[in-house]
Amino acid sequence: MDSSQQNPQFRQGTPPGPLAKLAAFVLSAGFLVLAFMFSLVALAVVAVVGVVLGGWLWWKTRAMRKQMQQMREARQTGFDQPTRSSDQVIEGEFIREVPPDQRLG
Image (cartoon, rainbow, N blue to C red; front, top):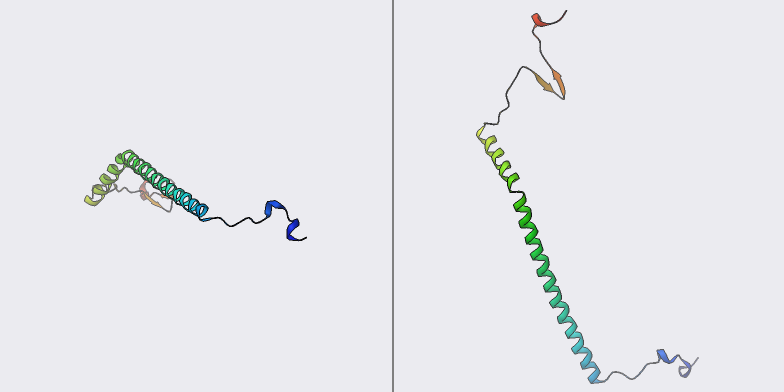
């Protein structure tokens, strides 16, 4: 099959002229500028949404943070000591020492 019998759809045309090249350059530059502007707007929207969600989360957890701070201060001052009793818990087992005069049997 020689070149004269090829499908006309795939036939190579004349190379683009300078006006076509200039139009392609201007359109490409315009699309790049639009894409850059869109990315800046999208980034700004994501940043604002992130700040708003972060502020909301900070506001909703303020009571928990205050309680944690109070617990930390109580632990440092030593007021949070558990009371001791005669009962001991070792590895999840309850051990109770009974004096010999109170034992059954």
